Length: 72
Figure (cartoon, rainbow, N blue to C red):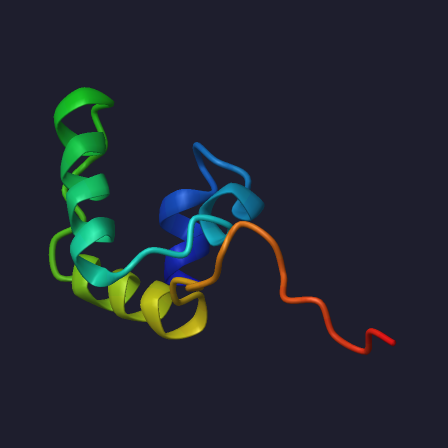
């Protein structure tokens, strides 16, 4: 609920969850949004939010295309 309360005021939840970043990139993105987009200070909730996003929506490491399987 904390993530939804902070981020769905400005973004659709799908936009947030499709980004799938690591903690460093989430923190950099939040910092940029605070500096350039007037995002308010997340205070102690920033660590909670970033940890949630990284644990539930981690980066996906794969090539441009999915690996083909079940090919005859």
